[in-house]
Every structure is written in C-alpha cells, then in structure tokens.
Length: 124
Image 1: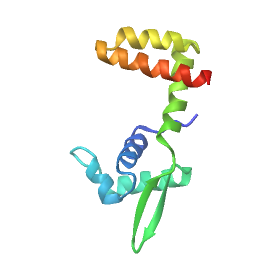
Image 2 (image 1 turned 30 degrees about the horizontal axis):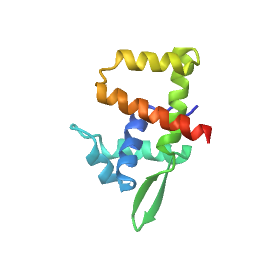
Image 3 (image 1 turned 135 degrees about the vertical axis):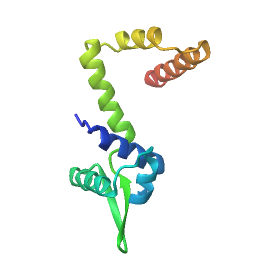
C-alpha cells in the first residue's frame, strides 16, 4: 500500500487542489509559518523519485503535477482502514461512521441515495 509521509501528503493535497504548480505556488498553500523552499524542494525530489509527482521543465523552473491519483491513494488507504480496524467488514465501518459522526438527517439521506445508486449500477 502507498503510505505517504505527513509532509508528502500535505504537498500532494496541494497539488491535487491546484492540479499543477510551481514550487512558489506550493509553498504559498502551506499555513504560516511557511516551510523553507529547500524543505519543499527536498520533498518534491523524493516524490518525483517515487513516481508520485512529475514535472515539466519550463526554462529554469519546474511545473509540478500529481501522478498519483487522489482516488487511487484514498481508495487503498480506505481499504487498509477497513481491513485494520473493522475486520474487513464494510458494514462495521458504515455502522461506526453513521453512528459516530455528526451527520445531519439530510447528509444521511444523501449517503443513502448514493449507496442506492451504486446498488442499481451494480445490478445492471
């Protein structure tokens, strides 16, 4: 399973949001105090080596973009959570999620509608 370090995850979240960006754009996305450019450069280099992000050289600067898809990362991460904490039972997870989160009636109904739609799609 892909497991990003905390700073790597923060960085790729910013790239998912921006879709692409230069180092200065990425640094600006962080809250104050902003990390040093050298810190971001090191993390970016590691993530390029791992294949999680790519870049296009534009003169002297690089424009970065995510290669790791958000759905792919969170899908694997979610499956690992269900496996580790809910004995591979999505029903246990759903029960925990519905009872322990502060979802409004509207949000629960929206969730139910999404599940109902997925059931219809699977039956086709």
